[in-house]
Image (cartoon, rainbow, N blue to C red; front, side, top):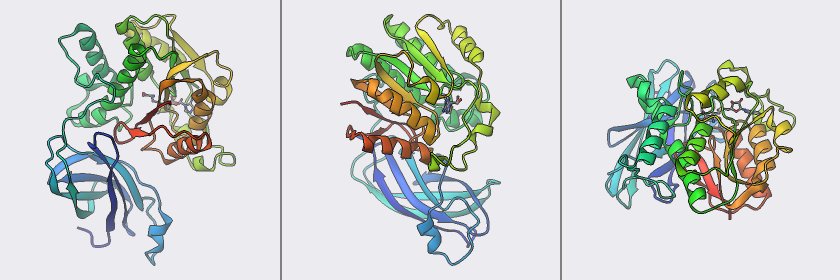
Amino acid sequence: MNASLNSKVEDFTAQTQDQSEWSLLGWAFAPERCIGSARAEIDGRALAPISYGWPRADVLNDFPVQCTTPYAGFRSYLCLPPGLDAGEHQLVLVFLDKLEQELGRSTSTFKLDHRIVKKQSPHGSAEIDNEHPQAAYLNLLEKTLVGLPYAQAQDCQFRQDGRDWPELAHSMAGMARLRHLRACVETVVRENIAGDLIETGVWRGGACILMRAVLRALGDTSRKVWVADSFAGLPKPDAERYPADAGDTLHAFKELAVSLEQVRDNFRRYDLLDEQVMFLKGLFADTLPTAPIKQLSVLRLDGDMYESTMDAIAALHPKLSTGGFCIVDDYGAVPACRMAVNDYRRAHGIESPLSMIDWTGAWWRKE
Ligand SMILES: C[S@@+](CC[C@H](N)C(=O)[O-])C[C@H]1O[C@@H](n2cnc3c(N)ncnc32)[C@H](O)[C@@H]1O
């Protein structure tokens, strides 16, 4: 262990209704080398990696040395493994540098007051029966969209959790977020919640392809799936109007620019391109306020930045039906996105409880 690493878990709290996901807040500080990533172990069992952190001035103030690391604080969501017994457990955070060399460890204990049972999805279709042809079709489609059938063995956990930018898969979101999206679409159809479905920020289109497939499997011919994107990547940050986006570099990644023709072709490959699929090409600020959408039942936001999240939620949340779902892909992963959502909810007095799907995805149901 490198003696120059200081770290502490400050807060470790239950977040979700079923209490199988927990949030972790703390700080880690390595003055000599940058912290690249961290992973967690509970009682010696490795959990999924913790993939981000953000600078915390209060932590830096405690140390009378020049800070060179951009990762001085962390907030993350851990999925506790099913079957963990009630009682005391040991949590170890292992911090790594950019070269994946171990920098040091932070050890703490926590107490569980209940046994962690198997996770349920929020609206019903949790354990999906492969014997049923509709369910088997959607199960296979979810796995295909996240790229599990052809992922390298070492990438399977990242694909399960949706933590990477996969080379071939048609969605970045992992299994938990696609399973949850499917449950939301099934719920609005089953409960007759009026309105179309939309994703703002579609990349290769995988999440929209899943929404179209659920409508097909349930025989719903009345709803449209709106596919909104620049189809040319993210905008450059406008730090004057949106200070939270200052320094954002996502616009520079050509991997994030997928053309409309490519996305259309991806729908076609699954036999899911038809008149129920509608494309909205352009920056959200230009397309969404005047889009010919009357009502929505599922609104999925995946534009990463403050500006992109705010433009989409401001234009579309008012069109979401009561009982409809608002889903935010980057709530945990991108602080600027979280800030936009929190600002919008506060400004509009939205008190519907926000729950986490996994380490980053969040959702609420409009009341
Ligand atoms: C992280 S990717 C979306 C991933 C996708 N939802 C999935 O399931 O794999 C972000 C997408 O948002 C789009 N985007 C971000 N900000 C935008 C904006 N302001 N206007 C239009 N498109 C935007 C980008 O072009 C990119 O395709």
